Length: 198
Image 1 (cartoon, rainbow, N blue to C red):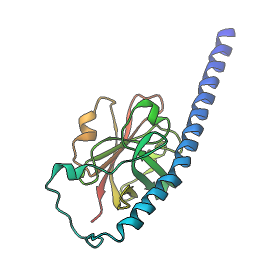
Image 2: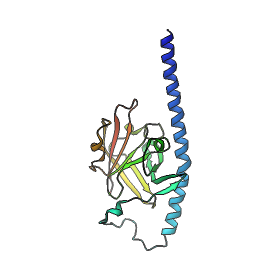
Image 3: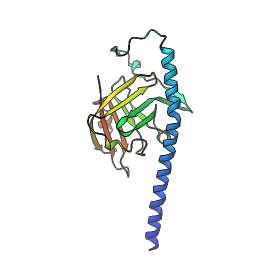
Image 4: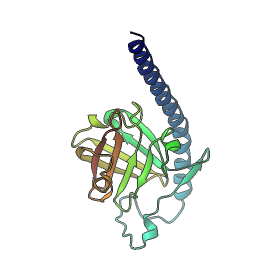
């Protein structure tokens, strides 16, 4: 009886801790998102006077450094833009690099770039981060807006549940955008593959 009570108490404590951590992450991400959008708008306004090709002009990237994404530092962290997932009613800042501390704040770039057509983003399965990824279906829209104010529209092509060790399946570059998060319990990865919309 005492053991059962202790187990129930432990499970309840863990649940409350996880919910608190998810709420803190949501607050942190939502606090930085308006700052990020303001920086993008300021950059757009200053670029408006520059001699840039018209929007939608195809660009050929021969220089590998052209694949690098513009980063902006806010509150001591680098950001590369923000992700919009209309079906899940999400708008999330995306950090330039990942580690466990950053993942507690916002989704992060795991590898790749928009121009390299191999961007891989990861986040915790918090409800207001990537917890709803399994609810996406083929044809759903995902939009990534980089720090230069350029939105790239993607459509979900496929979804899979992968082993945490299936790194190559997530980073092979077979899809233009890959999103992934842990399943509850962390035994697998919900992985959503997206193709760029022309």
